[in-house]
Length: 481
Image (cartoon, rainbow, N blue to C red; front, side, top):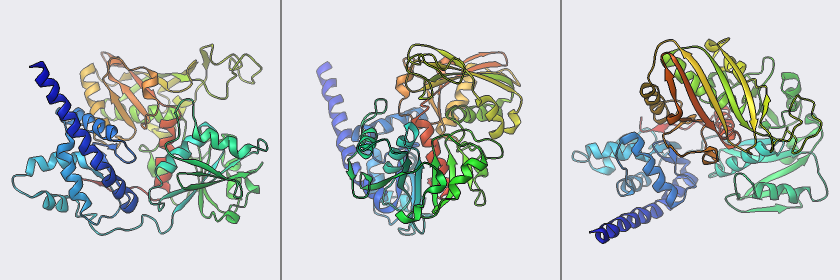
């Protein structure tokens, strides 16, 4: 009997794997030729491996309380490929589940044509011309933004990374910057091919030419001489944070809008993608994407406040060390940060609690916050200690946050885990702003404590790209409704 089960399990896996492999070229064709992003209950399948596709189907059990098989979804994907679709985000998991409930009354082709009628209007470009993107700075966040933008290039009709502006480091500057993009000690190797074009002083990454421009001041660059026009510039240096400083970028020819990857000061709009997108208007030219911690906690705080009401609370962050700290003890202008980052936990200030009020005004004055820098290179943990307006049980709170993570406007921001074994390194590469660790949730009457993991580098960079996509008018319709 055990041998029989062994054969059954192996055969089932081989079937799933074979179908997943057959799905790969269809997913790639839809993405590169029609700008169709295929997902399974929110998990993108674009640029995935066969194993990734199977794991995305496995994830669906959290929504369905049952398994979703590629045996069921493959025919759905095949039917989608027969149509001449406009750009969209299509959830083949949801389509498959809906069809399973109706398959006795309608053919698959008719069902797909009905469900996707709104985008079955023929291939069309998302924009009249690609949106040029410039990175000002090419450090930790800059290079991760480059990876994500290159990954999302598709047919080249959407966001197009054109240049990165840096200070020249030496004669081999281009080679070294290409190497840093190619290899990352935390996030691994770049998925693709990177070469250099010395004549153009450019890095060629998966066919995308990224010019490396050397400059000491924002206003001194003429981007139009490189064919860059009406660009969105992402300043990831953090050197300027107010409207006056960031406005220097707008004095450069070819730049139309500026995004700061740090908390903005003064009247600079601080945007957490998915929460206060209404601040992104055509008239505004300077934006802040807030901080990684603000992006991690605000979606969860908003969700909790909407349902249970937050009376007061404290946010404590265990944050991985950053390049601002010293590798070994040395002078630093800020208190404590001069001590060796890999050897110490360092108490430091954080503006995340105050920043929450800029994004969710109803929480103004209700939260305090502090941070501890810890000896890990990436992934941080926010601890939300909250007093709610009514008593709540762990099961009710977790169930609510689980549903928010699976099917809500905050689906891309909030993830959820119920594994008893996860640790910080398991969240390297998470594309969500934050991940609720449900097994750590504590409640006592109207008080609750929530633990939210977040990749403070990659997850934050994904949030920045989502923000830029909205600025460029690149939000795809999501189907089925």
